[in-house]
Structure formats: C-alpha cells, structure tokens
Image 1: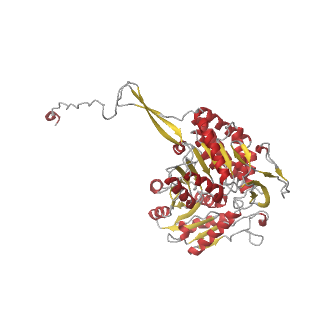
Image 2: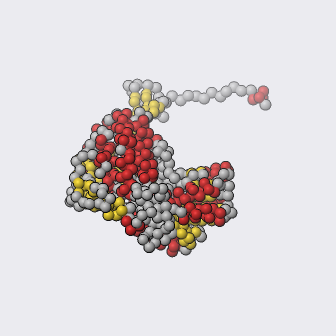
Image 3: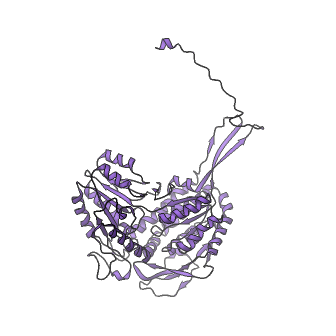
Length: 542
C-alpha cells in the first residue's frame, strides 16, 4: 500500500493478482473517517487489470451528504475569518506534501484509472503547481480603495467568500481538476463538500488525507464517495434545500444543464465545465509532421478520454491525401497497454467498464451517421488486437484507435462528442470553410489550427468560438495559471485556474465609510461645478 494514505485504515483481506492490497476507504466528514449511514459500499477496480480491486468505499446516502454539508457550514465562519495569508500557507503545505508523495500518487492514479505514468505524473504536477500558485494569492486577495465624489467619505471593495461549495469532478482528471476547484475555493474562505469520482475514490481519499495533513481545519473540505446518480444528485438537490451556496461541476453537458437549472432557480452560483467536440484545422502552409503529431496526440492521448480531446479533424483538401497518409502511419503504429508494466505506450485502458460501454455506443452512433470507418475494431480482445498491443487484452478494458472519414456537417457524429479513442475527419475547401466547420458544432471548449500563415492564425484565433485555442499546438488544455473553460455547450462562461477563477468563488462587497458625521447622499448632495465657456477667437484659429 502507498504510505501516503497514513494510518487508521482497516485492510480487507483479499489476494490481488499483482500483490497489491485492497483497502477499506471512508468518507471524511468533519475530519473523521466515516462509513455510509447504511453500511453499503462499492468497489474501485483497476481498468487495466479488472481482478485488481483497490478497495471498498462508502456508497454515500442523502444523510451522509447532509452530515458533510452540516460540517462545512459549521467550519465556514472560522475558516472565512482566518487571514488569507494563513489560508495560503496551508495551501502551500499541500503543494509540498504532494511533491513529497508524488511518485506514490502517480502510481496510484495509474493503477486506479489506467492513465499512463507520464500523464499521471503531469496531472499530479498540475495539482502541485495549483497549490504553489495560490499560496501566493493569499497575499494578493486584493480589494480596492475608490475615490468618493463627496468629502470626508471613503469607499472600499473587498472579496468575500460565497459559503459552502459543492464540488463534483469527473474520473479522467481526478487530481488536477478537484485542486483547480477546491484550492481557489478555500483560498477565498469557502468550505467544501467534495463528491469524489466514482472511478477514482482511492486517489481522492489519499488527496483529502494530504489536505488534512497540511494543516487544514476539520470541516473545511469534506469528502464523500458514491455515484453521480446518488451522492452527486443528493449534493445538487441540497441547492433546493438552501444548503449549498455554490456548485462546481465537471462532466457531461446534459448533467451540467440540469445543475444549471437547479442553481438558476435558486440564484446560486455554478461553475460548469462540460463536454467538447474540439476542432483541429490543418492548412497547406502547416508543417505536416508537426500537425500529424498534434492531431495524433489530441485524438488518442489518454485514450481520447479528455474533454479537450480532438473531435473533428478538419484538413484542407489540397493536402488531405498527404496528411492522412502520415497520420494513418502513426495510428497503425500505436502502442497500447498498461504503462505500469510496459514502456512507451501511448494510452492504456478505458477509465472503467462503464466508460468502455459508453464508448461502444458512441462508435455505433458514428457508423449509423454514415461515416467511413478506415481504422479500429472496437474492443481489443485476444482474437481482435492491433499489432502493437502489449499484454493480455482480457485483463482489462482496452480499445482500438478509431478513424472515421467522409464526415460532413450534416452528420450526427460531426456534432456529438465521442468519449474515447476515435476521431472524425472532415475535408475543408479553404480557410473560410475550415473556420465555419470549426464553429459548426454545438460545443466550444478547445480548438487548434496548424498553419504558418500569420494572417490565417490571426483570423482563426479571432473567429473561433471557443474558450481555448492552440496555434501550431494540439487541442490541449491550459497551464495551471491560465483560464480553462468553454463557451456554447461546453460551459457557462466561468473559468478554472489562474487568477480568473477567484471570480467564481467570491463576491464583491462594497463598503461606504462616512467620516463627516452627517448624512451625505451621492448624486444629490454633490455641488454642481459650472462649466465656463472658454474665450477663444475662432477667427484667428481659422
């Protein structure tokens, strides 16, 4: 067992094929390890080795969610009153502990959701970067002084916390994204109830333990496990009950719209980071080898299980054949397998069996749309595996990389996200057509263009309707200090990361400090200043 989990854990006697232990996991409510109120649990399994059960975790009930919310409300007053630099110091401690335990956390994340070790390492590093960035924000949680139009009066603005925040994140980025959300939330003085991803409860448990080890007071962050349809829904329902002041959600657009409706009718703030059908355009002036590398990673890195994964690959018809020849050579050479066992694999398994089933449904949708399938044969099995698959495919849930061509704007697959290793390829007649196609889906998260024509790059970045754009780079997300988020069906305009996210977890408080000892009314008691017309000899100036 990784030592980062600390003490006080009860082991479940179970033999795993890889010799790794299975643990008893808990909710963390008001700093205490708790089981679900009815004792029901669920298992977390390694998607690369399904016989490897990482542990059992509470399937949280509505009562458990309410207990966590009560703890967050109780802790709020004291935490909000804690000086911001002190809050920042605790956050800095979290970052240093993450660095100390990084190797353990990387191995744990790869074991629990199947990401490659390199990608897990990058994600844990992003959580570290987030902590170190926001540690310093504790000394920069600025307000302003504002000049009054009246004498002997001072005006100020302050940032104030919202209250109790409900945090719901997806399984594909189980360490970076919750830190994107909770670190600025607690930096601003809020408290949180965090519903862990169903497919990454052990990693979430380890991260929550680190937060408390860093000196976080009890009740500031409360961790609850369970399904989205259970614990997640109970947390959203609590908005209607007046128990939640903010919801921050990463997941599907369908669920995000539901959360937005609940928050909207209660005038409660919500941050929604949703799906994408991210376009990548390749123009004739591009360095084709560079474009191929970007498109290949965008489509198949993380087994295509990123909200910023490449959706529509839009290639200018003048270079289409040359580009596709190079692109398909890379696709056919893809190494797939468990990166904790085999080196240099591009991607590992699907995040879980559920994600695998949903991906197969997505493939059927693409085929029924009329697209031409030129590569990929669904799930990898003993009798159906690509040349460079590493290991025994029956151990886990692995998928072929899939490429679909002859895709047009009127097809369903052009508009719908396919969460997995699949890309739809579209031909563009010219730049204007390519930009039109890039904007034609209902999403607007990430986007990219490969071109060495500066005017095309400028026109693309100013014409695209997306939250993020890469120029001669893939459809990757932002760095830890840049805003992350989308428009249209990809989000409600709020942003994660960087200084911009502080707006999502605080409100402005304006203070009017009257020093004159009398009532002074702005706009009414202001002495009018008479404008005097300048004496100008216009004839001399003519």
